[in-house]
Image (cartoon, rainbow, N blue to C red):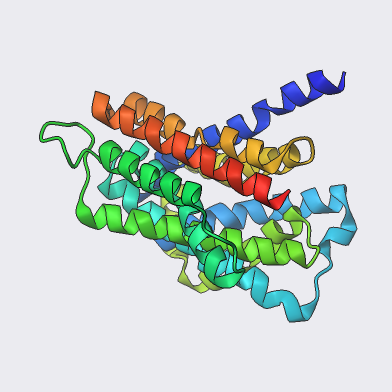
Length: 302
């Protein structure tokens, strides 16, 4: 029975990766409507916040408790991590194909290894260096920079900003690690990171324009924005968090790394972004390298 349960739970991080990979669809649509990037992120977290609060209320009220001296950790995870990630990613998907944006974002483990070396004195082994170089090679192949004829559009500015998205994502991982070492639950970290983002973006949100967009088609836009929040904020984090209770972190991370594959499929279906053989080879190489890297990290931390 336990084995069957674990096999079923294995679907959760895969679904989490698929939901993360769908983010570009919502973001592109909202940006096409004229909503600025700050408002796109704010609407997502603003709608997710009451759901997260209800989730913690049902799960365990003790998860709401934090120490005032630890606020900086949640601010770092939220603003320096998640907010930076979202703003960079929002820009990169307007310059790059959905698959390339996702591949660049998936390079976050490389920066985690680098930051961990300086912050936590974690050793960078030869295997880690090999995996990082292999992932970079795979990313270069997936980008389309070596191909003159490709429907996978890209720009150097988009690639640079996409790499910054990976850096910010790695910062979220670093701050989350610090919070977990302080014995905070993953749900607590997610909640207060979201609170930090909401507070920072509240005055930046273009309330008037967003109101006009919603009033132009109240039911359709309300459902679309709620779906954006659920599919890119609530569902993926919920599924991934639940999976961590039943399986090894390394395995969950590897299964969740299907995000670039999902983004490739969504890009093909919605935007006719047809991947080339070389870009698919690059995608596979990147995923294999990051899977090995994640597995090595999990073994080192076990």
